[in-house]
Image (cartoon, rainbow, N blue to C red; front, side, top):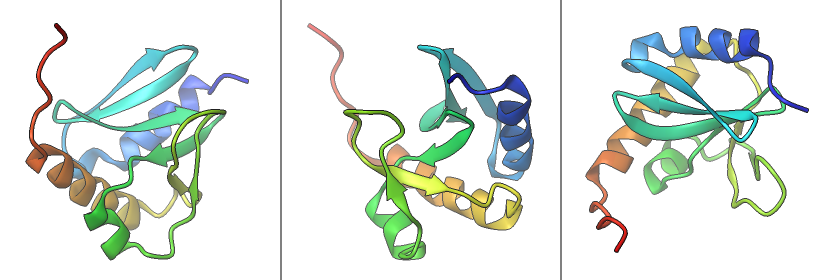
Amino acid sequence: MASHPDFVRFVSEQLQAAGHIRSRKMFGEYGLYCDGVFFAVICDDQFFVKITPQGEAAFPGLRKAPPYAGAKDYFLVEDVENQEQMTELVRITCAALRSRPQKSGRK
């Protein structure tokens, strides 16, 4: 079941305080970017954020689950109405992802 554009728009609006949020349709679902950093996916109207050590330290009780069969675990953010928690998680996650060494391009 594909995600509804209204849900994607709602999540994106909730995260505006974290930075410039952009969604991109991917394989029938959506990828989310904050200031150009890919940090999350929305699958089946559920919001999944990449797991980083910094995110785990800040939110140790946040549930983890794969967004689709065969995927690695992401944080599953079930309370998408908690704007403060979501914004903080996205800020921490994106800062951690920006600080990782960049992978070289495909050869």
